[in-house]
Image (tube, rainbow, N blue to C red):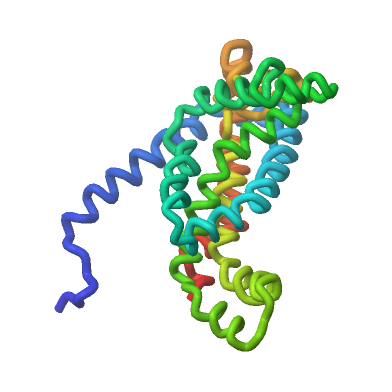
Length: 264
């Protein structure tokens, strides 16, 4: 006898098709790799530099996402102000924007002649086409992933524990550090993993706002794009490497968080 939780058998058909649709291109990359020369293809100086730069900038942008995203998510989840509700679509807009549009927006904000960039330029601070620009581009596209994950976690947790702590005389800062943040750890871990993975694969905004300077702004996705023309075998090998690194990040650091097993 089927149990009440059993799914209709037909549901497994589109589920299998969707899985095949995602898995087949990744399998095609693995088949196409020149395995006898794989190590030499991914260990060139430019490839190693690009990978290291990607890991460093992704880590920096994830840190920035956490510092900015945690307060943003809490405000969105707890505030009843109409202005906050109206700002929510703006905060989440980078989720649907083409990355190149995000890069252009950053360029007109922080570029040499941008709204803020012109004043920074006058002070001797240049952001565009620098490693800082890579971090800002990655943060711009990744921040909404952390905010939306953490906002959902905050809404699920509710505010009951904070209210109890407040009635016992705890100060707002004490409640923040000792009650609110511990409750949000599962959502924060999920959001941070998503933000890191998104930063690692960022291409369009980085290319537009930071350019492709080897050792400075050329991350691994940009290196793959350049190698696609000059050395297709290296591009395929590096693509597989990027897939493997992203998979390790998601599976090794966040699989249990993403499935919600730690939240129970």
